[in-house]
Amino acid sequence: MLPWFYSALGLLMLVLAGDLLVKGAVNLSLRLGVPALIVSLTVVAFGTSAPELLVAIKATLNDAPGIALGNVVGSNIANILLVLGIPALLATLHTSECDTRKSFLLMIGASVLFIGISAQGVIGFGSGLILLGALALILGENIWEARCHRRSGQPDEMDEIEEADPDMPFWRIGFYLVLGLVGLPMGASLLVDSASEIASAYGVSDTVIGLTLVAVGTSLPELATTVMAALRRQADVALGNVIGSNMFNLLAIIGVAAMFGPIRVDPEFLDFDLWVMLGSALLIVPFVFFRRDITWPWGLALTVLYLGYVATLLF
Image (cartoon, rainbow, N blue to C red):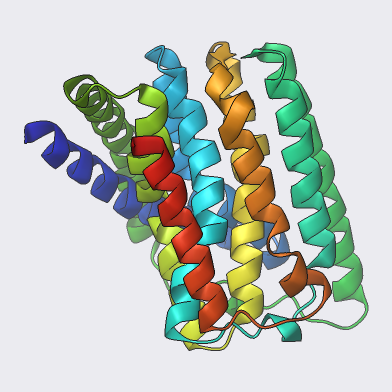
């Protein structure tokens, strides 16, 4: 039972440390005069992906590529089927009111690029640079567009960033940063090591553990955010959170992890899981392009599909 306990403890540390790091980094950036729109597009985006990033780096250094890739691919599948499915069971996601077509197409493009790179069998340093280059282009375009939008008369409000607190003292900012920077690697180490032990004990591969236990665990923050967005009728936040997280997972996390060593791609990914990831992404086409709301029947269908996918992996 100890590996399961350490896995849960590692996940808890990752979630809490990631949240503290985001709060500290956001408020430090704003105190240093970085515009709120830049903070929201960079600091918040990278900070909320910190748990997945540390897990991927640790798994790469431990020569456990199945956990590194499984965490990212499994998280992307869970983000579409589970993170959108469960909130829709609680409250309708009014996606007909928001326009995420451009972001969706970028996510599909990132998915196709990632599949093409994975088809080589190894994601090395050069491939990592390609992924990070694509991310830089997307971020640069988003920042340029946001700045143009602001010049048209839209204010650069700190209130738009949930973690912003203009009255937070510097000592608390430093405290949050230290706890986040210390807790993230500790949580990642606990989770990766215990997940590998669980895989060995139950006779399953690191890949399956990465696609299920680790992926769902690191997707919990996105699930919590989307549930609250559904209850507050903020469908743009819910859908934008999922699409943005999926792009960062593919481009930033694996791109950075590849800087620490080559990541071998298990043939199972190319035969099945990567296509499930792409197919899951295409399932939200009706909500993105045809302005349909994600009602409870859709939520039930997405959730059942995810449970079916997990059952296929385990049995």
